Image 1: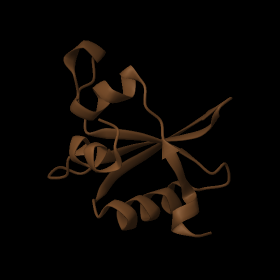
Image 2: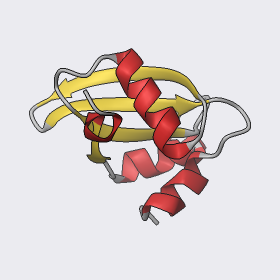
Image 3: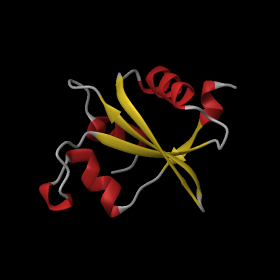
Image 4: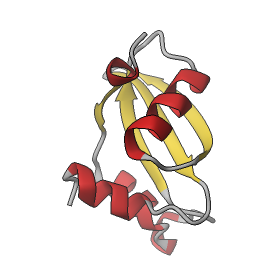
Length: 93
């Protein structure tokens, strides 16, 4: 599976925007997270590899949610990398 086809598109809602910065109103202990819709057959390891190669940022953890709209990956970046900066690069802001 090509790294380009693993990450389909970012999933942007008010909650995911707050998760980028870790707004206290959302009761998140840590922010610096992005959410992407991914291929349904993609594994956590494939998602991590594809994200790191595409955005040149290190991933701390990948969590998966399967929803009606598809499979979502919540990607937490390692300290020293900014989810807000990557969001600006891909046009979320």
